[in-house]
Image (cartoon, rainbow, N blue to C red; front, side, top):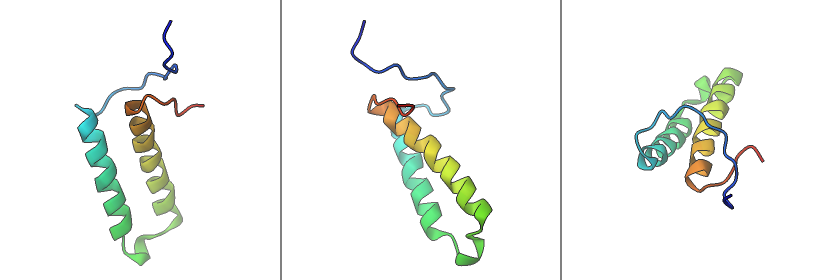
Length: 68
C-alpha cells in the first residue's frame, strides 16, 4: 500500500507533463486575451471547463487528488 492518494484514471491527452503545463499557460493567455464582446455566459462556462481539466491534470502531476 502506498501513501499516494487514489487518483481516478482519465484518458491521457498529453504526451508529457510539460505539455500539460504549456497548455495551462496557453489557456490562461487565451482567456486573458478574449475581447469583451466574446465574454458571454457560454465563454465563461467553456473557459471554466477547460481550466478545470487543466487544473486536474496539474494536480495529477503534483500527485494531489482533485476529487477530494
